[in-house]
Image 1 (tube, rainbow, N blue to C red):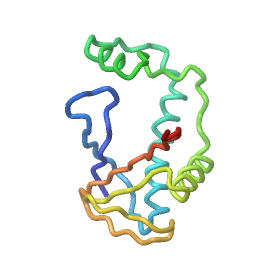
Image 2: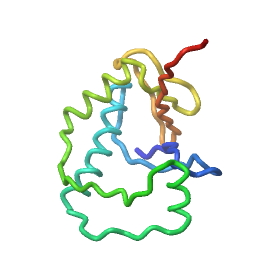
Image 3: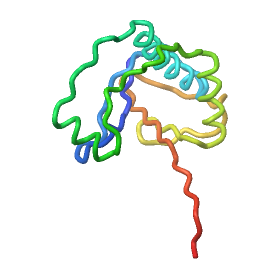
Amino acid sequence: MQVQVNVKRIGKRRNAIETKPYEIGAVRSIGGLIAAFVTAEVARFNERATAGETVLRYLTSEEITDAATVGKVGFGADYNGQVQDLTAAIENARQSFEDGIYRIFINGDEVGGTLDTPVMLRENDEITFVRLTMLAGRMW
């Protein structure tokens, strides 16, 4: 099943959100949805790490300017080359959802509750993961 995921592009001032297609299997619960996306991302990361990307790509002037507004200009290379443990990554993502670190929206409606809460996804549904920022400080 193909779904559309809203992704924020770091440093972009206009069109900061872009939609990317993802191919995931059938999911029946929030926990399954989280596991499907973590599995896809860990596989993508591990593929890059094991490929040993030795050639660094060049950065355009626009990419350098955008990265400078965020505060870090880099090539996005992982110099350690370590692969990630899928089981640990899924458990971390599930625990983060339960702790309220991020929220999930499907077609603009928040899906909440527990990991066992059922979800009904259709082809080309729009999914958004929103990471919440914890604020600290004094008010006086």
